[in-house]
Length: 336
Image 1 (cartoon, rainbow, N blue to C red):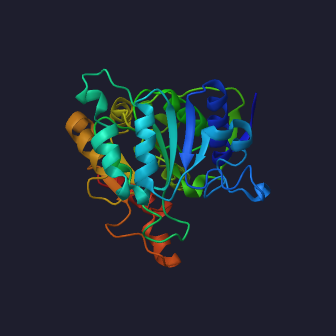
Image 2: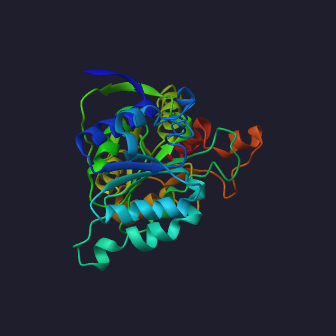
Image 3: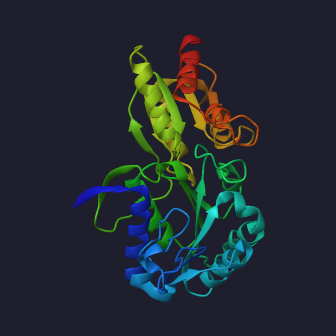
């Protein structure tokens, strides 16, 4: 049976169900317990956004508060994964990845390859991404492209609570390291989510809107902005198809190419900075694989190549808007 859940509640339920199902699943991070089990338990944080609130009461010591040292607990989670556990480590903001990046890209990502396929590292690193909450340049970045560049990592960024629950359960059960991105501006968004446990396979994009005139490819928060743009364009008689990538590595190029072969036009929307972004990668890949199907040059709609501003007015301009997406679509339609 389905009921409406927020993304925050879907993450909590996925963790709860997997910890109940599998005793090797543990959760580590800063303030994820936050005083539970001690005087003041009613005020226990459950992480910076309250995502893990209440799980300590059910799972006890398998919920582990850590020191404020990402290099220590992310490294510990990766080590635990090689020794039979299935850790989920919460990296509070992706912006903090610099202090534990070596453990991720030089160790976890390479173990299976370096040991001839005999090593498994079933670790999930959950982390917040995205601008729009006035958290400034060191707490607002969309660093998804950095991780997709690294072979050996699986990279997930859902846009809604249904996908979040299914993809997180899939991530915990997967035998490779998974980076699980959660856009902080989406935590409260509610959709219907089944009570029972379920998984969504990696590498399968979702067409959230069908159309014939242009293909908009995006992920995470930008899916909702793209839908807004498509509704604006529909009033002008322009019919857009929207592809929600869901996972960035593996990337479902088959669905993207199939859509572009139908519409003849491609607009890639990415909240990340433009250089070496998901948007630039997909534009290049489509030009390589389906150049003959294109009626116009692909367009990218991204953040500018600057840090995220703290000024509210500038931050709103920094984030790709429905108007900018609509303008890019109109440009491809007019030029063909």
